[in-house]
Length: 344
Image 1 (cartoon, rainbow, N blue to C red):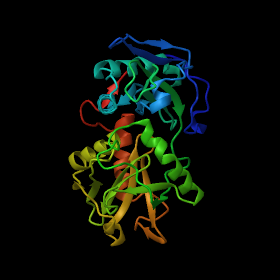
Image 2: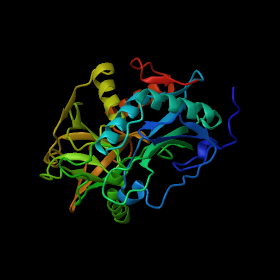
Image 3: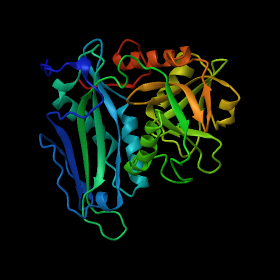
Image 4: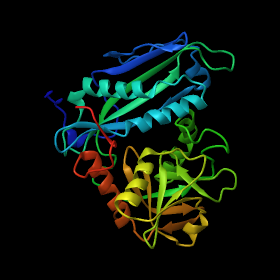
């Protein structure tokens, strides 16, 4: 058993902290090298690198946990690998093989075992796999060389003191173009959302809710998370759109709701008019960092639409989903086969 780092795990925020090792592999002459673990956290590239000139990059996010029985695990890393494969194909980047991708995750977690938080601490080891164009590009075209890396950092719970419901607003901007890149995890998508999120914060809101760019009538997602809604009869409603990023957390919650908890789930287009008409009792934003962030109210150009679940705590359906998913991840509830990937 590796001795853990001397960290006050309970006081960690959701911030970067350098750990001992990171994984690095380079693509050159049409092939990936074997990759190495290194203690060097610096990236050295040409001033004309494709990532700097034309933002050719993508990334993923997942966590390593210590379960109740002492195992170190990750949650469905094969789906993260598949999603990065899709991102790479859309951005004309070379695909890092899915099996090698998962092996790299295992290697970097084992190398940083001392940074994996103890069970019950509320902290986890966050993993950020990413890829970028590293060779010089001056004409508008894909680069010829790329680097794939995985960094790790210990993080605390996304919400200190519990997940209090947040207030979001309808954005006047579009998150993605029709037939654009909204469905992949490209860095450029997040760069375009920075102005909107900072403007939301400056005006007292926690996040932006984006409507479909074609008609601006249908709910899509927020700047960093998928949306989940609960009707008054307990039916879970998941907005469906080709522009929405396929969240692994959302996909897992859908399976938990329908197959484990016997809840009714609808994946469909959702008109924002349904919110105005008071059709929903609960709302949440789902993603790796927070699992589910409860939404208490939505602001739409001068009008607040408050969820019946209120501004004090998660609603009962979202709470049940949260407890079940985190229980599976932490090893206190048995989930579907293959979801929990044991590393040590």
